[in-house]
Length: 109
Image (cartoon, rainbow, N blue to C red; front, side, top):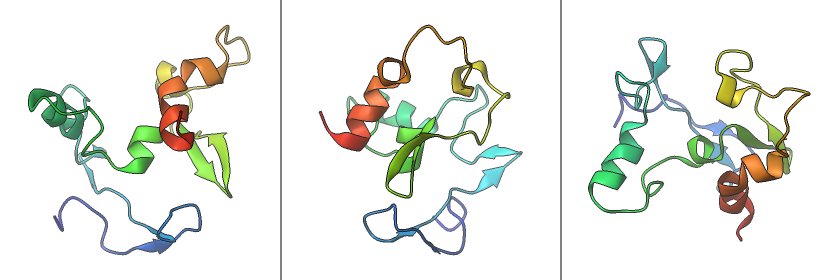
């Protein structure tokens, strides 16, 4: 597990525990992404017949949304790098619809 997550927890009031820890980066991407860029944790859940997010960390499920200072915001960490995770002024779908699954996860149904 030491090779999957960063070494130190960081204080973060937006997490229920008050602390967070990031996933490690390997070859310039999350250690859990496979060669096709898909989350191996999510794929493992699906292959075992479990809900797709049983193993995923909160941040990964919520992305491209983030909870910052108790508010849900657009996480611009990789803005411009991936069309699916980049906000545009000309979006025809409201973010509440486009990210419904993520919003339900964060807020509950």
